[in-house]
Length: 421
Ligand SMILES: *Cc1c(COP(=O)(O)O)cnc(C)c1O
Image (cartoon, rainbow, N blue to C red; front, side, top):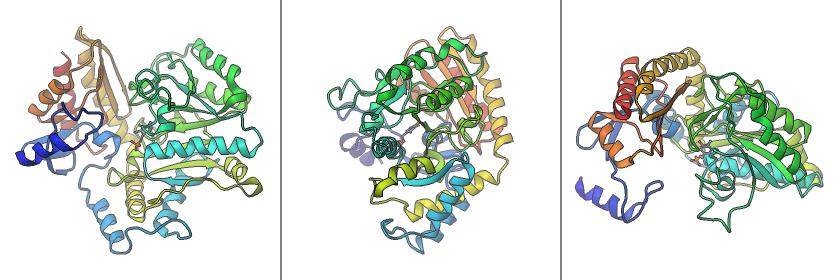
């Protein structure tokens, strides 16, 4: 075992780590339900759902069966000129569960790629419409949209990677992080900076991109649905497309199937990913309206993207089963259950002088500290207590699998409160 960890430390990149001074890693031997089993026999209750994905828990018999059934038929075929039932069914379901105007689906191989695809769609649309100057994207500070180049260009310019790739990342237009909290009454002034930016730049804007209601990896911030409504209205007024990145928020996480529902709006382009296959395989999708799709295709235009593993049958088959499990379950009362436990248990953290804010929405619980947390120390603390929570920056947060029991969730929350005390 130490041979494996030695090689891992010396030769393998982990996300956002140094090659010479990497953070310690835990060796997972298997996982079941909400429990990660480590090689040394210890068990951890998972508070992270492996970065929002594993909504039904690990090693799920139905998802395993879906993968096994599909692998005995065909694991992969190219999507150019060929199609298959798993992809068709998946796209039917996505069209059915998303807002009505979204009727055309592009299957992407990861969240970041679905964002690249969304941005390309918006730019190609305006090119086809004879407005090639409309190619900038208006984005919110505090946002996160992935690690590829176009996605990076619309991530928060300070916490994102702009400083490292200053000369190579496209300059986009940024507006203030929405300062209107989800859980307070709406302040109409909070739209002012956005309004000013869209007024000033609309002739050069292809689209606005945002994470509806919950900004995830850019700061775990929850903002007021009225802000999103105002954004939709202003996009309509200035004829700018709206891209909703629901890669983290989609499929129930905020207490709605899609976070756009909080504001009752429909975007022109929607990205879905992360929980799509229940955490089994990498798959995402970009949906758009017939207006955008037909616009791009005017005068014989084609949409220019086509990854090798587009529409991978294995990933689609697991996604179909994962969506069936979600939709046929009592997911909404279940998310309410998770939300009330998070609210009740994390409230205790507010009494610590080290804690700046506690916020909860759906299956997301956040304790924001005044000072950044030491990641190595945090990991040791949680692992010693049989819990898997991985803070970043000032944020100690969880978004557990939806199948977590009251008892396990309470234990994870109490450990977070203990850590932040
Ligand atoms: C995780 C995430 C992405 C990137 O998805 P990957 O599958 O990691 O490429 C994009 N947008 C949001 C909102 C995300 O949370």
